[in-house]
Amino acid sequence: MMLFLKLLKKNLMNKLELDKDQIEDIYKYAELLFVPSKIGLLIGVNQNDISTFSDLCNTEGNIYYEKYQKGKLITQAGVREKIISDAKAGSKEAQNHVIKFIDDEYFEA
Image (cartoon, rainbow, N blue to C red):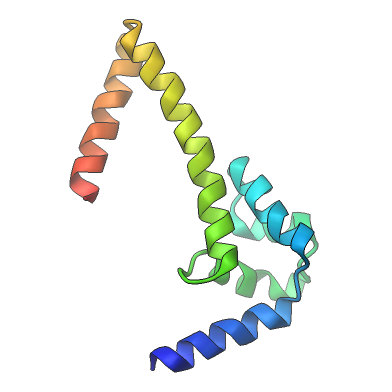
């Protein structure tokens, strides 16, 4: 079954035929927190293939997923850095966000 899924995923990726620049743009637009369907439109994915593209961006084990997740995480990390800095400087609102980050990480682990 796993082999079948790997072959299906590879077939879907080949069908999209994205070039290197388009693949890098997935990362760029994910950093801006666009969802996969909007990224697909921005990088020129055929409208009939947007659903397939979105599925690949949300399925582990392919370059689209990797670029999408890394882009989102880079932005999230930057936001967290700012919030943590503000919390250390005494911002009560930022401190509440940090407590939520800690709780979320604890329960996700």
